[in-house]
Image (cartoon, rainbow, N blue to C red; front, side, top):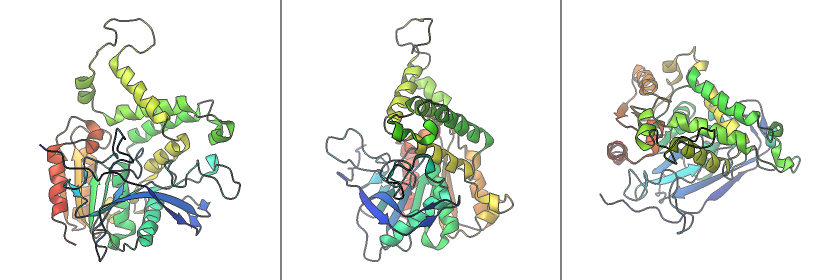
Length: 375
């Protein structure tokens, strides 16, 4: 099968918002920046815009490359581009680095205008609701009153759900992929262990490690290693690594012996070199706090009653972090409200990471749905 072309070389853009914003936590920012990228062309009536919401470790760079020499494209390049399931020859696609992020948008690493120093631990807690509000402000800046679709996987899918509740008239379609209406106790537990790895790192300094000129690399590395285990399935790890030894024999020590250990440490090191620990803490707490039903007597059907969009919900069979049962909770709540919803449960061995992988059937489902969008 011939791979469709990429969107090519792309450039990030920055939007500055000078007005203060009060966050759900009660914290306030005097203003903020959002870094974003766009692909494709906005049509004359601005009706073909698609917003893509990123997951915990994602960012605004969802497709294309910054230079021709870049080894890797944006994190969802296999799904977004000319001729791809989200076709940039039809749609104007927007990717945004969320508030609190570490890839250019205002976050803990940013300078606090009141002090001139990085926010660090003083950066306020952010929530999925806050992200949706700031994304809507960016849409206003771009002159987009209503999105053809809002799309997201994992934590991005939670943002899509929140969009349908907070701004029901501003999206026609909602694509919720490998997501959940709230975290289970087990998921919250995983997040807390990951945070404790960071918080207990001697180089964390209460979140103000910037002024000490250090990075809590050990804690962030461990947090990523733990998280990465939950994103994979046992079958995927077994097929790729099994019990393979690097040297072919036991060394009877605590250094790396098994290939899976080497892989996890590599992933941890790579992540710790490119991500900010304070942002990781913020993102995982936003995951924990997300629960639209909490404000409606724990009834998801009531929470989703404002939604007007048509929905496509996708889950993956081996995703034990956001299992298909969680997607079916969303389906039931939408059906309870007589909303139009399509559902696909994709057979995959890749666990939670399946939403990022190339899969012909998965991509076909997205392509078919997007091809039927009228604007």
